[in-house]
Amino acid sequence: MIYVYFAIVFYAGVFAGFILHKLLGRVRSYSGIINVNKFPDKTVFSLELDEDPEELAYKDEVIFKVMTTQETSEENDDRG
Image 1 (tube, rainbow, N blue to C red):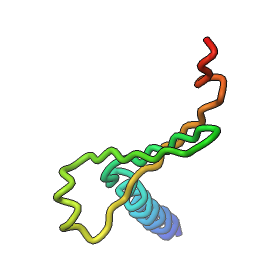
Image 2: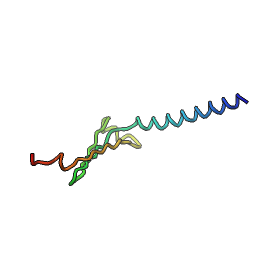
Image 3: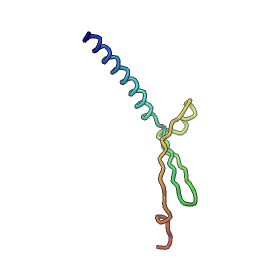
């Protein structure tokens, strides 16, 4: 009976390790960052690539991480 318990725990651990490997593998495969800077009157997008842009043409898919910042009007006030 104890062997059945160990077998169940072993296969549950293998399954959990497989799922974590798949999830963590995706996190590491970013090709760059899309920066989103939100201002009161506009939103500015910029792209930072972690690799040669020419290599993108040979890929089936590309994953970017999105980083958003919020700018307030006080930070950009020109009154001094």
